[in-house]
Structures are given as C-alpha cells and as structure tokens.
Length: 207
Image 1 (cartoon, rainbow, N blue to C red):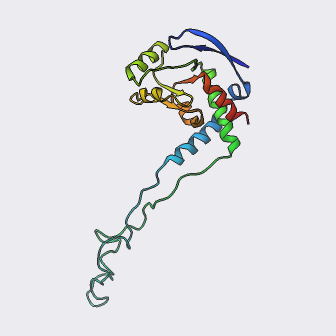
Image 2: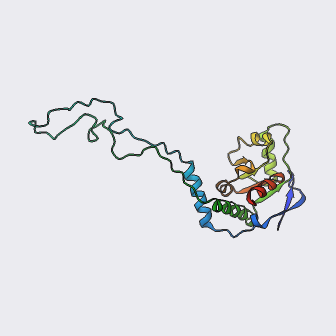
Image 3: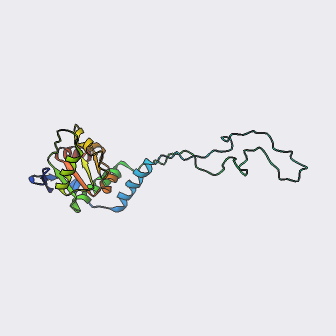
C-alpha cells in the first residue's frame, strides 16, 4: 500500500494513511484517460444549435409569379432557400452528443487519474478544514500555507462553509466524493483529499 502523509491546515504532518494499491497504484494509460475525458466533455455539450428551415420561416406560400412566359427561372414561394431571408437547407438541428463508455473503463480511468496524482506528488491528504463561517480570505490563507494555487478539493458532506468559501476562487473547486471524476482530477494541478473522504472513495471503487 502507498503511504501518504496527512497534514493539517498549517502544512504540519500529523499522521500517515495507507492508500490501497488497487486504486492509487495502477498502470496509467493515456488512451483510457483520453476516452473517458472525451466522453465527459461530449456529454456536457448542449447540442442546442439550430437553424430555421423552410417550414419555420415566416412568409407566404403563394407562388411569386407564373411558371412560364416570363423568361425567368421557375420560382416557388418566398421562403425558398435560394432567396434572401429564406429557410436554410443544410444546418444544425438540436441533437444530443452524449455517449457512454463501459462502466469498467470509467472506473479504471478514475483509478488511473488518482494514481497519476500520486506519481506526480500533487496529491495532498488533509486531516480537516474547519471554518467557523464562510470566509474566502481565510481559505486563501490556508491554500497559501499549503502552497496550492489550482486545486480540486474532495470534501465529505456537511462542509458547506468550505464550499461557499471557495466559490469565488476561480482555480479552486470543491466536490463531494460521489462527484469525483477524471476530467476534474486532470484539470487541476493539485488534488486535496480530506481524510474522511478517502473511505468514501474506497467504497466507490472497490466494489
């Protein structure tokens, strides 16, 4: 098992914790991480781009002029796509970009992402972050002591002061263990785990 130091908000070592190798020590494959991150970003796409087609454009369906005898090209109604203000022919329609990869692959990618943080020494385990009230300034001071600027914080439930205190920090994100995902782990430079959240992560990935 990987042994990691547990520090407090003053960056002082208070104890150690053993992390299971089945989660924090697996071979990292960039192709697996790429597949899962691509899936996550595709699922976030709104897919609301749309154009007005011939039937959606306001206008009369009257034939503009007679079919023969004018010397002009045959013309239908004013909503024809070849006329200014007419409908579009080839344009986007609302659609879903979502797709899924196998559950085992998603779980494996999550383990690989956690392992990569261990290997790069950018994973910190903190015993607790107790804030009497939501104060962004106090949270910034804690992060400065820990020498962390861009981080994903995994906190257990019931830590609302922490979440609100980080709300105005653009490079800090707070998630519950249930919301841990590959994209956010790789996006942020550091991963901060509150000690109580480790058991939740193990319960999720060691089923």
